[in-house]
Image (cartoon, rainbow, N blue to C red; front, side, top):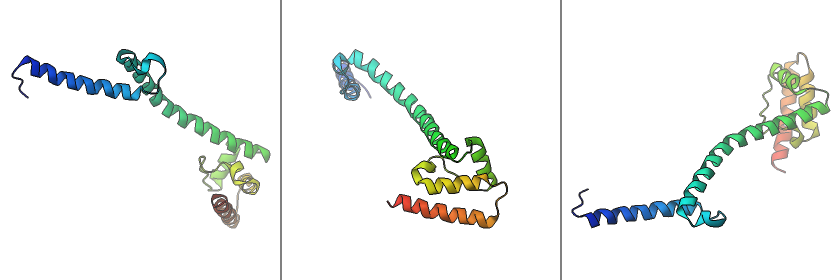
Amino acid sequence: MVFLTVPLWLRSRVTDRYWRVQEVLKHARHFRGRKNRCYRLAVRAVTRAFVKCTRSRRLKKRSLRTLWINRITAASQEHGLKYPAFIINLIKCQVELNRKGGPAPLMGRLTSTALCSGASWEKASPVMIVLLFVSLTCLCVKFIFQ
């Protein structure tokens, strides 16, 4: 791009600056005080908000996983199992439990009883595992369509 005169060069920069300022102020509209009107303050506030937003996405995943594990722990402790023993025994029985979708208290008492009884077996027979899966799928389908 060639600028023949200084006023043309300044003019193009002014429009770019205008839209850049408007973009920052658009993100700061809902802030309180002068932060939503003054560009200098808005830049700081918007930058800080974006940093917190990025950090919070990681923290949200961490806190939700902790919540799911706490729910499973509470359900397994009702039946006399600690969380690590519960998970290890489920792995031995070749039952995969999705921590996100599988908080047993949400699915009902019968499902958590079936899971804990399945996890408390030392060596489960394949027939019992199949029965456990059938009962779990029936209860999960029932839970989803309620």
